[in-house]
Image (cartoon, rainbow, N blue to C red; front, top):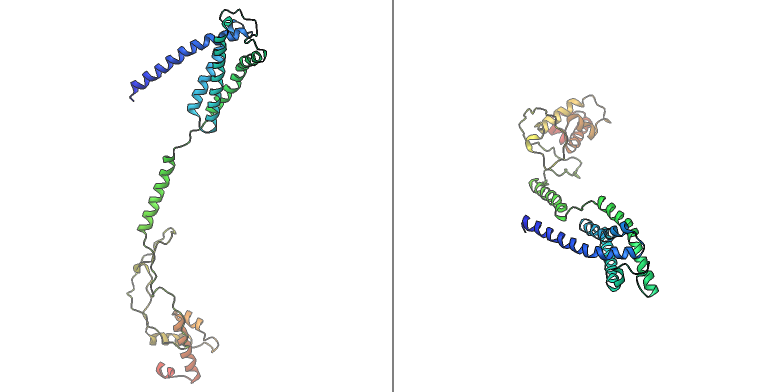
Length: 286
């Protein structure tokens, strides 16, 4: 529906409600005169009853949940009360000409007491329920829609999935697994693959989480030394060491090699010292 149609619909609704209020206003004014209200109070009495009905209707459109249920109950209660009073006004012709006795709305006493109690309690109820409804409307906070709650979560999930797809999972190869120690007490010295040495400028970066394997270009190259070079270097560094100082860990740290090579060098050096010195590594190994 376009804007013009909505305006016409609202105008028609206001017109119908206004005419209905005028009809009800006549009956409620006569009822107020019958229960002892003066001229001014009787004129304002219809606004107390039917006005609260309009306020409860607006609160029903604004509120939600338990507050909306409360507003509907107030609307239903005052609608029923107005209907009863209008019905009594139609059954008692004397109310039209103000010839009825003061406080007499029905011939049967229990019914008369109930009607008088209803007519006199509606203004007090309007004060209480009207104030409560206004307070609820002023403190009402609209609940965000479900679509708005789900949209950020969907975006986060999509970004997370994209990040997982773009990040390669670290692959474990046999070269990266820690070398298990051999049961042989004198394993052979393993030659190290030749890697060209390149100077890399030191760049300070902020610490970040590792997302995969370190590229080959970023790894520090290790020097290429043959078994003879390792043995010669170990002889030179341990020449003034005592026999007790010839341990695998001490030799490994001094020569900067692996634990397996450290054990082999230790055994060779001890064998050479036990034989009183050897001419070369081949004789010491024999």
